[in-house]
Image (tube, rainbow, N blue to C red; front, top):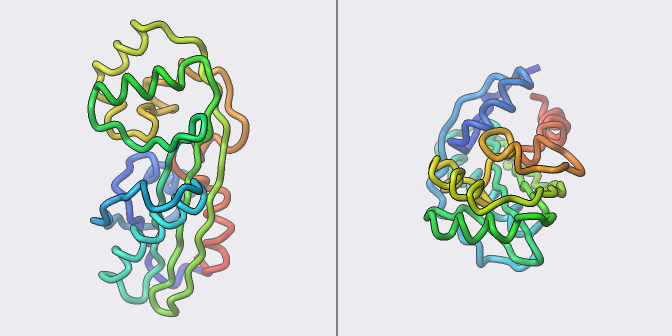
Length: 190
């Protein structure tokens, strides 16, 4: 039963791929909400808040639809890391994650714009990085890939060799805990 259009409030190619792999029919309308990582010190509340703001932004443009917003952050040693945007910041983030573990937390919000029903949730996975050389970090930064990724890396792309192991949901680390999302979409009759 697929009664309302599903709209992904994200331009992330990784989230798009995860939804396609789940065989969902959806369109993309990227949220224009500007992320503010200073909203909350609790990382779970922060990603739920950011995902809700992104979904609400897109919801205003789509009556009678189901909106899916998501946001991913990295937490290392209590420090919240978003996207680095500069080589220098990417180098700093990857140096901290080097030979250490960190949490990847993705928050997501699903809104039915007809009924205003909304559910937000957050999922955490722990990622363990191998010991990286300075050259490995520099070679990766040169690709430009880290700049728009939370924590300055993409586990399914160039940084896959940096990871020793993942505890928890791998798809969550990619950018969307698809199994959790599907359970809630089911409640919305998608």
